[in-house]
Image 1: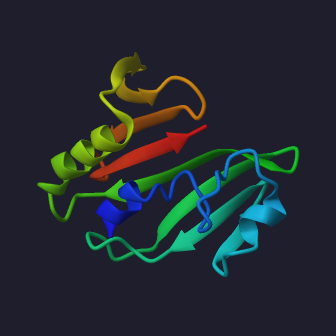
Image 2: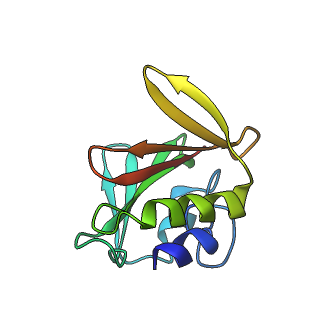
Length: 133
């Protein structure tokens, strides 16, 4: 499931394949049953990946009634070999990343233009944290 998650671009598109960023809250929420409001954000809850027991949550940051940013984590801790498999999938989808250091963390910038894609390895939790804005 994690591979399909990256390959199909769940982090970028609705089920219909349309880009999520810059869409209205109503347009994004309509096709999903498992979407909730958390403050000013929407949280889309999906089934866990094959490497996790808890749900996969995609946070959609909303501003002015439209989605501005989305973020989610893809865990690999239960299967450490999945770390490199996922990194290869990110590279296949978005190309080779540029690296940037931010307060001691290495950020992989896969796309500098819109939509900007940044990925950070969360070594504490054994996951890739993805942000698309």
